[in-house]
Image (cartoon, rainbow, N blue to C red; front, top):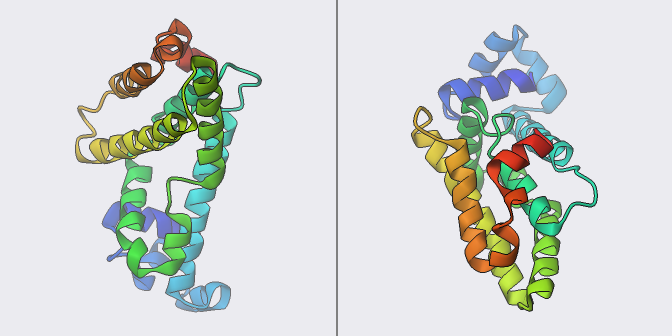
Length: 202
């Protein structure tokens, strides 16, 4: 039922994800929605939760690279987020639909943030380590954290609007160049290039 809900949202948008369309796709009766979820709102919330859990479980799997240097850990997040595993037509359409509805739907809002606290902390800790090595401040690490996450969110929007022409290597390189401007001693390292990162985590 949840998979059918997500597939319907990806295909037609949240507004068209009616109970009728969902149960038709799932080949189940209408009563199953109320029996298992208590109604459409709870079903959509469960779908948002599953979508979010899948994203972060895949992210965790791809960035599990051991005791790597902090710049490599940051770029692992960038490459994972922009990988076909996470950034694909189905996922971007679902993400866009959920983000658009989050303000009016508390259940969706709970699971639609792309700034999961664990992920934010992992990226921030890496930038704080880099900032200390470079003699920078915690403010710089904070700016780098949210600047990176904002760039990644922007890449998802760009992908959604121009999938055919979107270039993953270009997107990864653009983020790396932004970070090299903040931390030239770390993100100019060939180990943080798109090619090196793909070999490491994909």
